[in-house]
Length: 70
Image 1 (cartoon, rainbow, N blue to C red):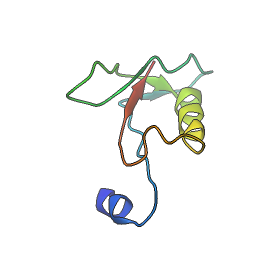
Image 2: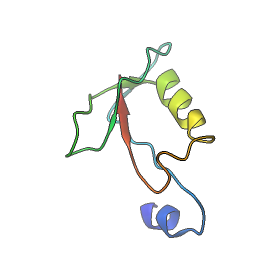
Image 3: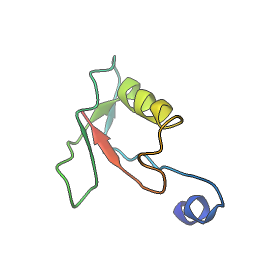
Image 4: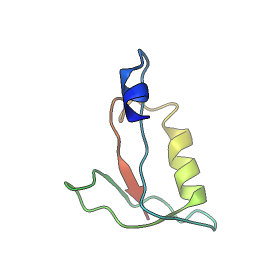
């Protein structure tokens, strides 16, 4: 799946997270990369949805796969 996305002739961002918990958004506190930055281990579904939706208007992570957490 990664090859299909990264090989497409489109702008792309892949948002990664370790564990998704139900509940209202608490805010994304960490955005980074697994193995390189401090990234926590969980985020709520609302936080994930909010971050993904914000990427539609952002160019910050085009061509990248940031990991997010609370």
